[in-house]
Image (cartoon, rainbow, N blue to C red; front, side, top):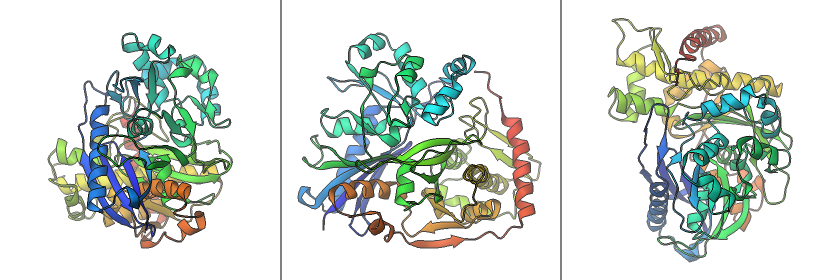
Length: 497
């Protein structure tokens, strides 16, 4: 029984999971790594720490599963998207810290492009809203601010990549510089219609083409391992950005199926099939995946920048809880939030507002407010942000969502899942295996090497753990969303940076 190793490189931790052919987790390991905030609105990672942590947890998971080279069929990679780094092709050394997707330092670059009238061109070609969230402006910033970087990039001495490219480069001992279509579609540099880097977009952001990785399919062998600390000769056969991987792992293979992942942020994706669907409600159009030489599959996506990170802030910033696991009991200690509303816009607002200068807001507090109300308001904030995405998605698709499949760490919180169902008016379905992101990467890799023969075989592995059905009257849910919008409007445009 050959196994698949899935590398799940996230925003706050690196994880590795070993999957059996029946889709169950045989072993897993995880390690958090440092977050760096050198200035307000800036978020950075150390690329070397990312690689070291990912390599070490992979070795630990293989050891735990007692899996050697002969037992391992392939490696699948899934990763935090948009996070941007540039390194020296020869030495493999980064020229600067990685700029994380949450980072807002490049908002002015996007403002300049917007004022110059380029928003629609970028939207039409990339499917993306012009925002500092995406990689393109981050690449430009690095080339503009690291001494000598632009000249070296033009001479082909440097390599740009999102985290998937960085891991592939390290795993293959520097032999492969590649990214898959799902990650490429998050850069502002990739044309989702031609499935290639776009010369006009590169010119707008002044980015030399020699800097860019080769674009590959999400499922297909692109190289083999040759690095210290891991078995050699293992095919790297699957790559997808974390949210696209979760859509795949949730077996959302038909147009109209949707999932929501609760991690550092919240990300809702709906499969729209073989044609990109342009949003009229400030969602983004993205490539979901491409299997071998098949046509690409597309998705609509709504991005919430701060979800689980809000719980981390209650723990680490305010000290209201000691462990995230305490959140549900604390929120259940009150019947409602007492009209306290929390807008966790620590990194600006994503869809549908796209305001990089919005900042966090906690409003409605009285002398009677206590920890329980703030905890409840935090869960409601996570859910309400996702409700807005679901409503926009249904309008764009012209059809109601029948159900919302969910995954991610916060789905263990039954209260949050019930609040999500109540406020959204949509059944929330939690699968028996909630490791959808890593599972998706494993499925993509396993398809390429024959562990699973087709999508139907994978679909049969998806099973329901629990369905949360709406219990709140629609009028009450609408009133909660209206109150939320009042608070959001107060949080907008706060930062002058």
